Amino acid sequence: MSKKECPIDAAGIKQIDYKDTTFLRQYITKFNKIVPRYYSGVALKNQRKLAQAIKRARYMALLPYVLNPRAPKAVVADVAPVEVAAPVAVEVKGDGLI
Image 1: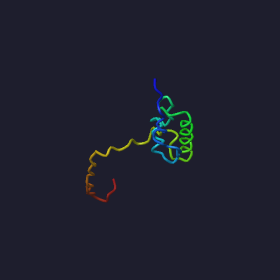
Image 2: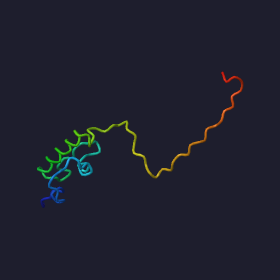
Image 3: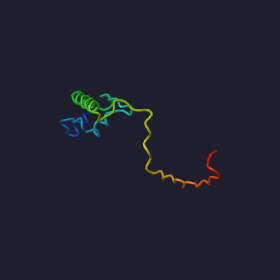
Image 4: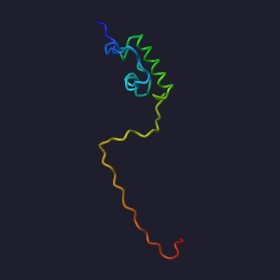
């Protein structure tokens, strides 16, 4: 069995920046948990840096701690816009009191 190379080292990344949220989101599950080493293949040294960067990004509100289950789902761009009907004029007879 050959040794796997760390994807962070393979990309040539020396510093893991907590402000780079697109990179950090690769190592977060859909429930916003940090992906373990045995799934991501990251070396122990880089996993510690990665976890620290994710925690800093959460503290600085760049990444959410938890998901809001009541948040509206992402809108699909392929859906055609809905036409709004024109307001209907209502004729009031008498003094307008019901």
